[in-house]
Length: 315
Image (cartoon, rainbow, N blue to C red; front, side, top):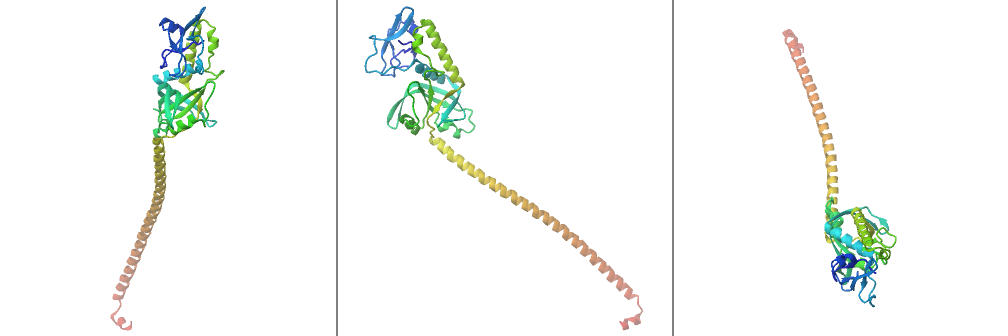
């Protein structure tokens, strides 16, 4: 017995039993991936409404559909992304908590198919994002990951960093972010408990749980980041920044040399000023000495010219 189904065989619009009944839908579809969905219908037991598989049993050869928790989480995140979701990505990478990454999800697709390394993968929620507040775009995650991120929801079986899906998507430049939604987690809701409730109460609980999920995602998205790919643009940016930093270091070195040369020039100018001053003082003293000697010579000549004529013979 299920309380949420898809309205079409290949879309991702969900529907509840009462909504299907009010729309007079005789057939809805199980929460399997497109191409694997089973037909369901609205059934009733007393006051309880629920979806049941046509034929009253789960056909052989099919795996169980995804949990209600899984469907709600990926549906809510996709809706928020398509509305534009500014949030914080709080990731653990290689067992270490990373600084929060501010970003804005701008689009989302449920059950998105990606071909990587020759293999096809179905993604729970594939999103594109921007980082309008990033100071240096070439060093941002938007540039590093090409503005693409994959969200996988871990309910019963999760991924690992060495899983082929993670490695192939990393090679394609797409980051993989896994969110835990297993029983007991913040996001978990038990569908079996809801089945025993009055249908209006059950649907109200589902609506409240969707709001709870949305409010959490609006604040932050917490999980494990399995890879940290680098786009070609990011690598080129790294190279440019490397060369820029090298040029800045060279400029700083040249500025230091210029500063040192300027200091030496100032010292030489000061020495030159001092020497010019000392030279001027020396010339002044020399000129004074010359004037004194000239004056003494003139005095001596004057005295000599006043001596009697006969004394010249005895000189």
